[in-house]
Amino acid sequence: MARRLMIYALLLVVVGSAVWLYMRINPTEPTTHQVLIGTRVQSGESIQVIDAGTRFQKGQPLIVYARYAAPVASDERVTAQLRVTDTATHTLHQQEEWQEARDQRGFEMQLDNQTWPAGTYLVEFLRGDRVVAQQELVLE
Image (cartoon, rainbow, N blue to C red):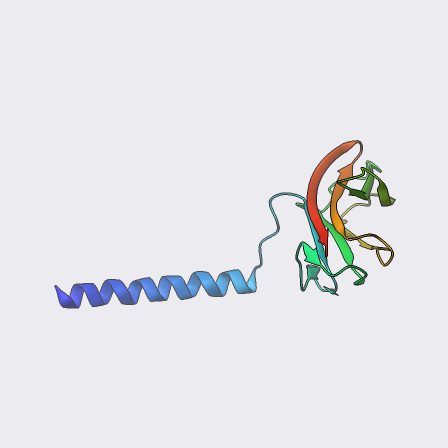
């Protein structure tokens, strides 16, 4: 009985290690569109926001990254946009539009937030006129 338990435990460790190694070698694409906010972006095969979060100090330079669930598959020339709105006053603080391109994986926008008041903001990622992802941003 103890030997059988040891074999099962060893098998579990081997399978778990194989899964972990596979995930490290083949990172998965997100299954939904995402809005990531941070101060640094790392480029590579898959762009990553290193310090992604939702709460930041007022005036801290920030980057918003709109990540597609999968690379854009067609040349439809859809207009996409990122927009940042103050949730208390419904004031639009920043908006940027772009034309999607085949194989595009995301879009990066530097926030011009140095003079924005402390508060809660909504960052929205739109494709056409439809919101596909959103994230709350709190400036303290």
